[in-house]
Length: 497
Image (cartoon, rainbow, N blue to C red; front, side, top):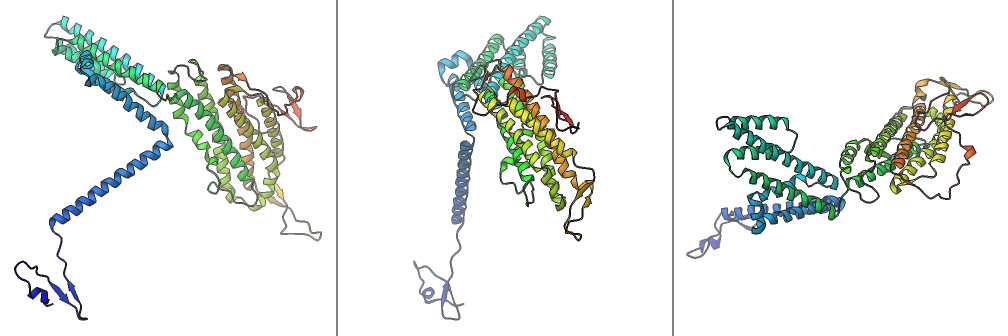
């Protein structure tokens, strides 16, 4: 390393530059290291850039959430509007003097009671107001008793009452108000004014919550429950169709992974919706009349329909297990699948048609004029499927082309029972599923009666003559030796006669 000429000429006011002469004659000037200020500015720039990037990602995510679920965005705006209106009582002097220094409790009430649905908001608002009134009354009562007992026993009575009532009302909403009124009464003279302001601020908060929840884009819990039930019925019909059609496809390995659509897994939504149905039913009963629903609409019946759908969904879940076990089934059982294919597909078509008709009934709130014919066709298809199932012996004889005699005919072989169990299990599940679908029909018909649904206009579909429909319990002969009893709508279909 040596000095450059520019280095030798460096003097006062001239910067000195160090460099390195490389063997090839070039010179690399050394770059001075950045100072602490430059490093700090660079770090600050990176921190600000990272913060801006995080904020931008948050805004993009919030926008997508608002587009995908507009109800959440609308609920957030409604809560903001309610809080803004209630805070006027705190920031405007005339209103502030009317409710005193406790105006902020109205804002806290909005935060506690405002829910996404009208029913939930009404439920919490009424409970909050009732709890506040009860707590204020108890606080005044305890204060009166403690005053009568004298100064020596007053703190003991108040402390004991707070402990006992707070312990007994752990799951209630009036612990805070009771404690405020009772304890404040021991030191503050304006006890009645405190209880009055507390009740007034809670009433103001609940009033504006209910008003905004109903007037601005109301979200009814009953409407959500109504839509949830018929959407689950649609998903159940899609799953049933998908699994049966996929199972009886020829020359294709069927597993849950190669299903073409997500609709085939819709039964899982039916199985997971019980908690949602229970909550919506609880809040729907608090809602006033709206849309097609009156105040006494039979919301409890929706829970029975949901329970019947879950019973049917468990059968569909078992069908998916049969599909997975099909991978281990020998290929020679394909002839047995063909034996059941037409009967299973026919039963599945009629079962899906019934579910689809139930969807129309609930969605339109009109009685179906075709459901009796559809149930009759499904029961008839189930009887044919039962007949096919009974024709399979315990030890199944299957033809094979591996061993042939002089006439070119295949020598039959015997298949063990374990190899035919997946196919026969699926057939049995379809029969059981038809019985559970009849349970859904009964639940929907009961809803139609309780809700006083009007009959739907008849379509162009040809109806069966009355004489073609057997009454419940009547026996129809399949042949000279076998008779199958037509099942009642609310009973399980037998596997054999």
